Amino acid sequence: MIAVIVSACMWLLVACLLVLRRGRVERSITYASFTIAVSITLNIDAVYLALDGWLGGTNLVTLAADLALMTGVFFLGRGVMKAADAPSRAVRIALGRLAFTIAVVSATVAFVLIDRRATTPEFMLDLGGQPATAAYSMILFTYYAVVLVAMGAVATRQVRVSHGIDALPPVLLVIGCACGVALSAVVAVMDIAHISGNLDVMTGAAVAYGPLYLLTFVFLCLGFAGQPAVRTIRARERARTTLSLTAQLAPVWQAASEVRPGISQDAAFDDADPEALLHRQVVEIRDALIDGRVTFTISVAQRELLEEAERHLVGGAGNSTPMRVRT
Image (spheres, one colour):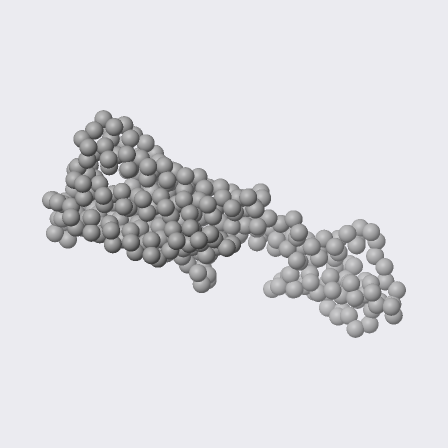
């Protein structure tokens, strides 16, 4: 059931990213979401049993699903690293191709050494007593933990420089990364307990596995989906502010146009590019104020409005810095 919920969350994230970030050249996060969604879908029992039966019934779907998940995690890390400002050498190594390649090769070798027997959707439970299986699992989750720690470090830096709603996505990512690292630790305990025959410890640790697994994906999905959503909200807020400032400056601009020769008399609102119109208003009002050939003055309130429009056009000194993960 957890796999179904997580799979649904991942496919929803894919849909959100395709809608909100269409047209973007950099699609690392979108690729990551897609491959992870495929991986989780393959782990749904009905899907797993059907596909593995077609592949000979030797649990090859487990390897396919896990490699897809590793690839997705790799793309996640790359997307976050590209968004980071001067990532540290440790972060670059953790999220780099070399670490990914080593993890994939090591996991594949360990998988080949497993006595896989017949198809089982409970792969680790049924075969986890083998050292090769434990090694396979720990390689996977060690790689996940390394990438999540690096991602969490980048997201933490973004939390520190963000304010208001802009801080929400990186906060969610930090929580998701923390849950993922905790999940990796739980898996390591379960693997060691399994091969050592301490089933009580394994069973006790397994209690935390399901909730941590679900929370990891939920928070990461919310974090990554939240970034384009926040940017969309910000863009709409900015558009509304632009329209409001344009309307408020229109009388001042009209007055400037009447007294200063050469200023355009076309005060019509440009619906296609309101920011261009606002910029034109600000420039021409300023030109009228400094033109010694004419007498043009504005009130204190109008000057404050003009300065507000100028701050708006340059982005505003007090604006927060959103997390710039390219999706």
